[in-house]
Length: 387
Image: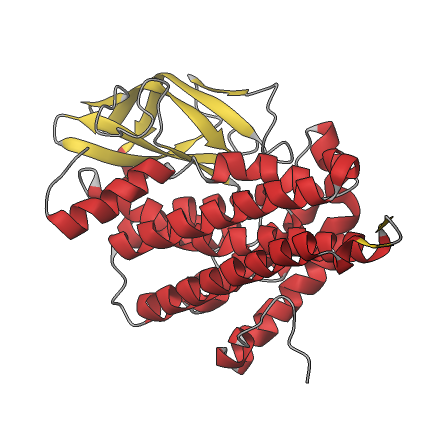
């Protein structure tokens, strides 16, 4: 029996029936609703916001959170498969789901009060409230401890001043999970974007994640009630805990991008005739695509084991760093090489490799650059912090 080109090691057989059902439902959504429009969205620099209600109806927002808050209560492997299938469509769509789920709904669930959970999570799961995550600052990048945004207590409120940069969903958001320095360390706040003094400015002229909204956020004396402070955590461990959740999903997403590129290259190379034979009949093309299959298989096994560790409560941040580093590098290299195999046709968004290659320039950078994750692994091996 022939092996599936996406799954030479039959990783799918290691999934539960529920996990396979989740993957299949999101794959259908991507095939039927995302792929027909996403190239044009990328060309136009438009996030397909019309797909958000459908994503919500499939249970893709806050998918791992409990059903009592309107969420699907899925395991971590299922969430990973959601990310993989969404990113097979486009990194922008997976980024939306990652931010909504891991960076906004998760901190409310993990660090918020019961009142905050009841107020926000069901509406966010339904797609009626969109969130963004305000941590990165213009000067900060990979050094979030160098945070300038601050909040001071004023009676029963907090007054926030500062700015954030490279914020996915910023101009779509109804709330921002904003992190700020206080006299008692870094704390998180649910900032409602209609509050006076809050503004969001969309970043234009992007060559990557064009089917995604990226923004700068500005807080100019924004008055936030104490009821909107996340009381369950103080210090950098709060936002870093959220990033670990999101990075886990990011280890799965690039697998989908790489699979999309392999699919396109296989189809194109079978149809394209050069020097009297299909490109697929040449050794150079077969060696390339075989190497892509090897790297995709490695990434699949890494993320699946990471998901099993996460579901068992044993996942460590270093393990997430290793998988994000490996899988993002895998996907960006495959996308670039697939663009090359397609020749001149590869530079147009009528084919997916150039779009995935450009998107992966962002994915390999955000939530920890490749170098940062290499240094995390290096610190684990040596016991020496080289940051």
